[in-house]
Length: 635
Image (cartoon, rainbow, N blue to C red):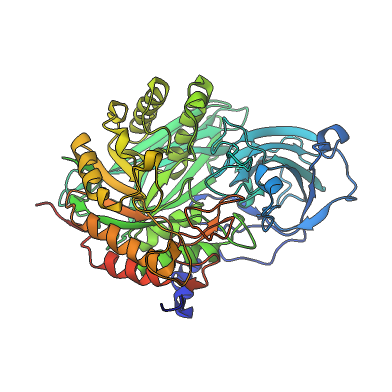
């Protein structure tokens, strides 16, 4: 059996040229606040809050009582950099269960102008957040992976400010993903529960007006048709005086004028315009053509006030169509038979607090294996979306509504929170042409009861209201005993996580891998009008050994060849995603069906944890992925 091969060094350089598209990094200010972003799209006036932060772990949860947020002394605090996962590398049960930790940033404003307002933007905090500025509360948030902003009230414009953030990573059964215990008493979960400020934090300058939302939506009736691009901006007046506002910009090389309005004090107004593109350069995995969008807003107070530019916004988008017709997923009118890989933004040393070099490696490896789709169980970092946009990768965009139990889903508040997660994901990521569909959950009950069916209907309706241009899907555990489920009727795409021949499944129904072909045919018969996708399949591998022994490299190779061979014989199948591209941490005691596991690492990856070594099955995936015509004209 051949040993795993080392990843070529040149592959790590793939996509490095994209860094030049980001704002160049000037010399950092003394407190680490600098006009720099780690991703391009968004409003002007963002300042990365890098440099030194302070941290203190609070395992006894005494910080609130002892007033950590009020103290000016640095005693008891340790210097760290942000992003930060405080338990990265700690594989203990206590680490997985979560704790509380405190972050502190002492900073000065880049500008002390009294007319400016400032907000703090947190890209991802796990899981519950409370924040104070100069000892005064400024807001809270619940959930991870989706950005949120807090207005910085009570700033010292000419002096030092103290931002303190309390993070509680202890999960509840009603969270996404939920907490839980296995039969052996160890925590459960689909991925490691890293605590901390897992993505970067920004200061954002607001002058008179703010962008409450920017949406650029392409509508393409057919592949050869002219396109209509609808540009919509919601402008918020943050002052106490009415403002005469005008919004102009460019779509590609074409100027656009979204009009002029009077925006009342502390109110919002919609500006919108439709742009017709006669011969659009379509975005696709084969040709990821992008259009630059730039918007600028001017404001003037009162009738005689002089108009001045106060806000700018930029993004890149693409013109393409994605829909389900006759039970097939179509991209620009072509039938999809895509091949993809799952992944987590995880690193052995950094946990989920990875930098852009890790994201570039993941995307480079996905491209090299021949994938055109990537998937994870939560919204990707914005830079991952931008990489996918520029390099032609579609994203199965999923919210972390993961394996919540039936009794939990019966609670209306849980279903409402899940729908809120979906709304926030769509509003945050809808401008990216790489987003293929909105996935509303992963592996809920395989037989939806009334509560789960109610959520599915509500989530599908919400997604269509917010974005009628993309399909809505779900990923389900692929059990033959599930049968046909009417609760999936509102959906466009059914993803099945199938592990035939790897896990035994309830009652041993997955034990025999030869049942896979018949199972897929049964799914097709159940949902003839929906696109059917294999959203997961995979096998652990961490050693040499015979092909019949689970956990060997030879067994993983055989698993890949058999499963993709069966799928190749299903011309109606819209795609398949191998789970996963690279190894990542799951939970204490993880064995993943491997008789000789290496917990807590998920070893179904075809690349080792950290990306250093490719297993033999990588080459099999690569060969089989590249042998498929993944997008073809309709027959």
